[in-house]
Image (cartoon, rainbow, N blue to C red):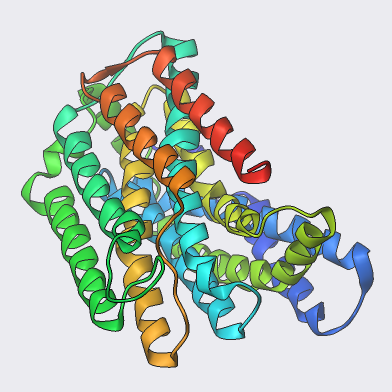
Length: 362
């Protein structure tokens, strides 16, 4: 017998993105602060709706394709938002992509993974996962991160932390190659590396799988919710920038805010899975999104930069490099044994707090 909770969709997750669409129509009018508050509430509600619909689709298609659905959806939001802001010609567009991608990686590696390990460690003391899949993801993530965010600081064809057009094209291609190789491994060649270890967990997920009709409706509403999130986030970005300027915070905070908004659905899904002792699903989602963020965003912004002649700065500064290398090193150590405890989660969250603090107080 099917679980009744998966035979229909809650009314709120259907209504939220539709109402937010109507709210968005008022962007062209100057309706003041109260309207911006309503639009912000609509944005959060649409993000939560996107989470729910993505989880429904994920349950239907199963692992590891389920987590891939949400990872690609989140990256689509990020790419669309960054590209739209670059084309709008706003302030500091040259470093916007770099700041957002770097913030995304730090939030995922330290914040989301750290939070999952902490919650899982508190509730279950120890959680397990398959080493092979996680090891492959971290290998590709380390390579692609260094090549796109650190190497530009040491090339000499162009002065500054930038790639020349030919270098940018080459890096965009190898980013796609690395991410494509990982996708091939995850979905075809070694799919079993990313499946839950617990056979009972797989059986329960199959039993609670939604109907084709429910999944189809959720897939459509997921696309609508993601489009609404992109449009509303873009509409709110000038207010965010003005707010940051008014308090004198660094410009890189814009990238962190964009990344946090975009990653909220993924964070909620990953933490929910960890609470249910499904750490494999949490890591699939987190590391898959980290890879998709770089592997798909870099080629997209590279094409926009070259085609429209826009400046693009990719190299992160020395402080960020130290924190990034430390993060990759610690997460590699934390996920090397196939089992995790609360300690690894605490360490990653401490690094995340250092990253946030040193960004605001450099």
